[in-house]
Image (cartoon, rainbow, N blue to C red; front, side):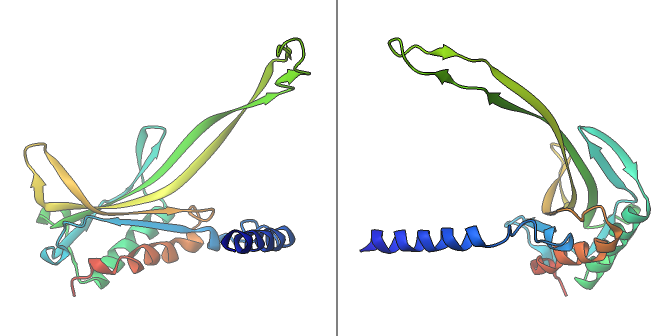
Amino acid sequence: MLRKTSFVLILAGATFFSCSKDPISDLSTEETLVYITNKDNQADYKQYKTFSVVDSVLVIEDNRVTPSLDNLDRSLLEGIIDNMEKMGYQYVSPDKNPDVGITASWITNNYLNVVSQPISSYWGGYYGGYGYGYPSYYSYYQTSESYWLVSMLDFKNPDTANKTFRVIWDAQIRGAGVGSSQYVTKMVDSIFGQSQYLKIN
């Protein structure tokens, strides 16, 4: 009975999707935006009171790092400060020993993809299982992926032995609209909006 029911559901689902539009192609630019946030489960956010933000965005492309502060970068950083203050943190300059530091990066990865396009794997399959092998042809294409990465570092409890700071929260922003100033406020508000555990007020 269960198998019959499952088959009917699968058949109905296949019929539905075959008659419906492609759900991905129907999305607006804003609807493609995806927000991924991660927290350190060991972190007690209530212990942090002050924060500072980097003075520029790090642009990381294929392991090359350069600072940037155009209008989009500035809007992103201002949005981070605004949201952190709404969460109850006090903004201070880096030389005032903030409890946490916020970094922002624009990351671009370029990939070279290879696709095998065989004419035919084997022709016929006769002669004792040995066929006439045809070579595979390869086509190459390059894809590029860009996204925002915002990270919160624990300056209050540094790892003095390794001279590093622990990342206690981070957020990725992905989608077709990540490079548009039109959506920057929504993007920043969204990553903090789904991270209410950061609130200390």
